[in-house]
Amino acid sequence: MSTVSRVFKASLMLVSALALTACGFHLRQSAALPAAMQRVHLAVNGGADLQRDLARALESSGATVEERSGPGVAELKVPVASFSTETLTVSGYARVTEYAVRYQVQFQLEDGAGQVLLPSQSISMSREFSYDATNTIGTTAQVEEIQRSLNDDMVQSILFRLQALQKHGGVVAPASASSTR
Image (cartoon, rainbow, N blue to C red; front, side, top):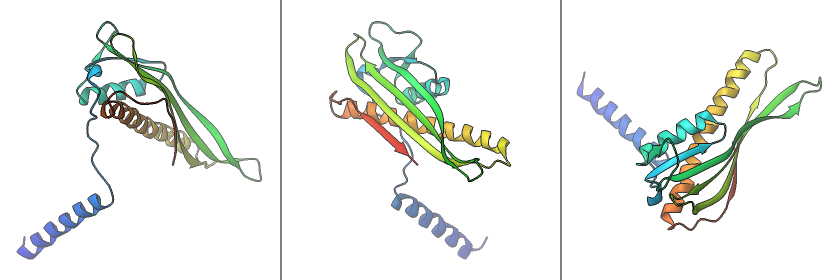
């Protein structure tokens, strides 16, 4: 390989790295969790994927996820984690042409003594997609991928709320948030 080719490739990599940082792209890091979450139990109603992904994220942030709640074990309660699909537009022939997949999650955090650290929070997210009546198999795969994406974003949103709790010394008001892409 010639020296010019090596210099060109190195320059291209450097420009690519600078472009990524300039556009705001950052690798996701682990969250700084409140001290009360050293040991935590997840009580998720429905949403097996949410529970699994949230457990992984909490563990990568330094928490120990416990099988059962008990003294000294914080509890992250998720009583609502549900997907729904809504029709957005219908063609002139009464055929659906656009859908929205919505994801609603409510959660709260209690410390190991049962004191509420983070009051009930509600996060709603949605993604819209076009429906092709000639490709119904593709639509199912598309909905599943949208749900996976929403689940990943929801885990990050929950971690951001927990990190805000740690950052602000345990003072986070009840909140409701919506996100649509």
